[in-house]
Length: 608
Image 1: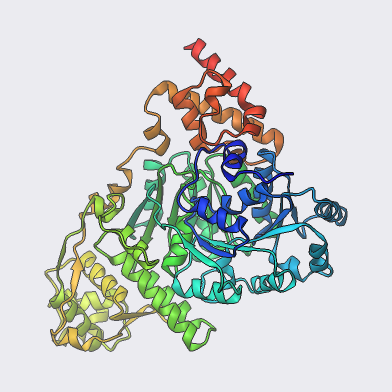
Image 2: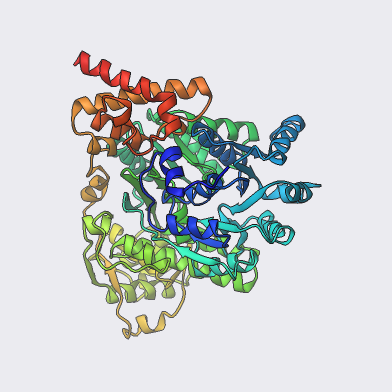
């Protein structure tokens, strides 16, 4: 077969008219035999960077993928496009594995997905040496880095592919890697002579919202009912027990929710993940064990009920929302206890001092992000080395700019109260002393005789809690979660206590405004489809998509993305030629589904 033009492959197979960003340059580099590391945000089109080259030349692209579920989704999606794709994994029978290997050796595969563990399987590298391998694609490449947030020891074996077949070009891809992580990916995969392509990290369709915890369950429910009723979403929690409790509570409130964590039996995890992928409008409440294998494009919100350990982890997890480019929400609720929990986990870490120091820096960056008064998106992009001149207008701080005040004196007062009470009491007791409460504990301990007793009467309990939370985020207060949440001084507090360092604090918003902020916008598809008839067409197409998905045993988005259905509903093409102009309508999908899509539109036009 003669080599195919990448743009022709893009149009005929994938249904897109043009490449985005650096895709075309990356593909040309790979087709010329070059190695590369590609950093591109989730939803930015990383997969096309190896899928298109795989279809331009004879031979097979071997894709290293971290999870069996992810491989299966990718294989199903490729087959919908008419691509010869297979997976090779431990979930398959011996006979199924041998059948795939025969197809590989016969040159009958465009893409073969394998897990990194497969590289160590007996005879695997020898088999690859006899197969027409044209490209190694290493997906989720940050898993090779010990400094990354998802380190997988098995990924260290990926370097053996290059040792065994040095003539085959390699493409390492990830959505999330700060500079230390990038450096280690290059070193571990021996990509020093290759190119590094860094696309913009911005996800402009995601709205970043952060709230202080104030009955977090109700705040979460307000988010779902106010903006995302009936939408698919992911809720992240720190503990396994909490995921099950929150999922059960959401179901009691009428929100369909499933738990997911590593402690569940494998069959239960697989069942819940399959339901989330194949059904509409489900919410998964999960630990970080859930996500890397999730390729669902119409996740409309990601919520965090506990603090992520780093901006990298936060960016990766929130990036699972809105992969289809439609508006989505990244929502986080935090409190001072979260800071204490993360500090405790850091102290228990088994890493060496260098690794603990790096983890501490990452946590500090995350704490700075949540307490920032500036544009959230600017901070995220800056963390990954990308500067943005203007504010984004699509985060809570841009939509409702917080007020700040000179908090030096209240900071000095509360730090002094922590010190004078013995650096072992929790926030509640310290605040009681500051506000001059004459309760039994304060009196019994003699803390009513301290110089600071009653000096903070002018501020409410809520205000003092906000001040303490911000000081903890600044690293000036340590929260001991090993004990009972006792507070102690931390970092360089001396300049603050002496009044030599100015402390700027965020003013608390009015409680009503804070609770109502999540309901500011209509739902995403309503924004695209303001016309009621277009909305009705969209819903009818979604119904038929779900029926087809169930018949074929595949997730609905594998057949069509919501964005494609929304474009069809908006433009309502009258023939296949018009339908082919819509993004995402490649030749195979038009052949399979085109006539039925046109028939649905015609029937609804007549009924109207």
